[in-house]
Image (cartoon, rainbow, N blue to C red):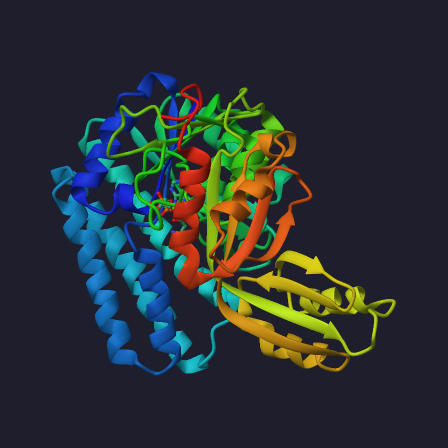
Length: 456
Ligand code: ADP
Ligand code: ASP
Ligand code: MG
């Protein structure tokens, strides 16, 4: 068995779904289980509808709902069998009926909770998985739909839920694995339900994570992440186009890149795969013949020090100075307790004798945190910063990497340098306006020559 996950752009239109169908069909012998994301930008649209509803923009919310329904109908009706058209219409009626009710409820309550955000954002994958199942039948496959909420069990940290592995694995092995022996199973990514049966989600970009939970749960031989790029590239193509494809990379390197912003893979994806040692492949659904990136337990020997450059935009830098001459005992603890209390993850930290600088990527609860910190420290913040992160298992064995970084970035103001505790990354902060220049200079420095065994 293999798991094949298709992201939003891979199922955004009739033509895209047709490409997906032919990719899956060609692998029927490997007993594929397909995990699909919401079609195109559906998740963003659902969240916008929720925001409009809760803020009293009822007409706008209803217009957007109608548009979203028309989009789903338009992009699937030409790839349905005659006798499945009524079923598709029933699915749309049912889901959009529920959505309209939900939106009405938000308007009355005037408040969005994490639980209600999950209820609405889950509709993208609920719809796409049901419709793609019907489309697969049109393309001659024996497809069966499974509602992921019946098999992916999570805790109740809505919008960022963590899977409960034993329960999920048991259901996947009991329900999905036997079905996949005879049919092509189609499931939605991103969604699950709590033990009490309430709809939850694994966080934005979470369909990759679903694919790997499913892969581990059914004992798949491979997990394939099909997306809109040729694989893991040496730089984020939205910042620096034309990077090299990384042919093979280790789980540890891929996890680090994902954590530091390489959106092509959700950071948690590798966790179940490592546990069961299942290789993960990143592949391009528009160019299925490109061999992609293979993520495996051990990195193959490579002549380059760096495998790829990741970056995270919209970072806030927080500088905290002790109001005493030296940092007092317990100073760091008090700082981190504040961030912890407001569930705000800290990405990078650096300390000096009297000050601490750290970065966060979600400033939603920063005002409350700052109020606490100001009771015992002087604090200022800087927005529009970016983290740049060089990743490669060779960084720790190659002398002079940081020297090369500073030489390449001579005329850029580099902040907060840190060699991560994992020893396979070197990261630092620059102003977002310097990001493209920074990545360009680093790419020239570290990828002017590439080892053909590892890079394309
Ligand atoms: P999907 O909808 O298939 O899950 P995503 O948009 O989540 O796709 O992820 C794919 C995108 O990740 C690419 O289009 C690319 O812009 C971005 N990306 C960021 N960093 C990298 C990288 N190092 N290599 C490849 N893609 C990257
Ligand atoms: N549809 C979800 C999102 O947009 C999950 C995913 O695409 O992976 O975040
Ligand atoms: Mg994604």
